[in-house]
Each structure stands twice: as C-alpha cells, then as structure tokens.
Amino acid sequence: MKLLPAPRMRRAAAAVVAAVALTGCSGASPSVVAYVGNATITQSQLEQAVTGLSSTLQEGQTVSQEAVVNAMIQGQLAEQIAAEKDIALTDADRDAVLASSELAPLAQVPAAREVVYDVADSQIVAQKLGADAFLAEIAHRDVTLNPRYGVLDPAQKTVVTGQSGSLSEPVAPTPAP
Image (cartoon, helix red, strand yellow):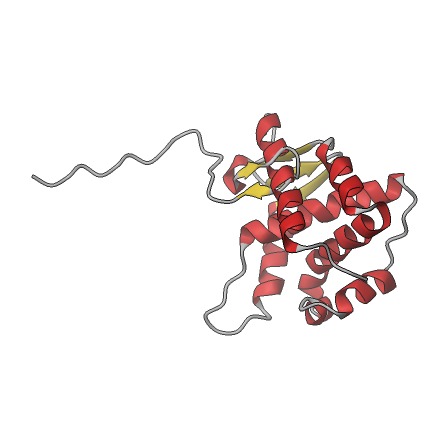
C-alpha cells in the first residue's frame, strides 16, 4: 500500500485545522482538544499519545503536539468516513500500511499505537476512496479545534502552522532609551 504524498497529507491536515477555526469552540470544554463530528478528542488522549510517542525518541528529539493533533483529527475523520462508506479498518490492514513506513515500530508501543493507527486509517480510507475524494469528504465535515491548539484549515481539517487561536497578540517590547 502506498502512503499519500506528504504535501497532500499536509493540505488535508491544514484543511482540518481551518474548518475548526471558522466554527469556533463555543461551549467547548477546556479538556477537549477537538470535536470531530460527534466524537471528542480529549486533552488526556493527546497527552497519552504524546507521552507514548516521546518514549520512543532518542535524547534531544521531541514530539510535535501539532502533528499528533493533526493525526488524531485525521484518524477520527477517516474512521467516520470508513463507517459511512463500509470500508473495513482492521489492525491487520493498519499493520500492512505501516509495515513499509518509519511508523511501524511505534505500533508496538501501546501508548503510541492509537495515534499511529490514526495515520494508517487515513491512508487506508484515502487509498480506498482516492485522495481527491477523501479530501472532498473531509472538507465538509464538522471539526472544532480548541483555540489553544491553533487554527484549523477548513478545507483540509489540519492545524495551520504558525498561527494562533488566541484573540490577543503579544505587545512588542518598548525599546530602551
């Protein structure tokens, strides 16, 4: 199985982020990272995934929380689309997709497995539907990202890098006389 090219996955992720930003987080619980349709991604789930992934890193390496949020959102979208389109998502299929990727060893780490399987789910559904059809499906899905985690691209449902969901901006320091 072939993974989607990185630019397409980034675009898909960016779309996810923007949609959430546009819909806002009214009524959102502070312990919620994102609402994806009727599903909720919690702060606890995010922390477990980051901790699991971090446990596999070498000294000096870090896990991008933004990348983990993107993977979790994309995985939840893939699960919902798969359920609606009668696409089976089995551990065997996930393992087969991951076998040829750098993520394969992470599937053996219990705390990291869920987020790694989220990546695989996105790949499986995108392959079954076709990349363009998958992106079209996620574009019209409801995703609401807690602004603490950034801004969501509405078309691809991914966190937009370098943008804040904050309503305030830091004040530039006053130059010394």
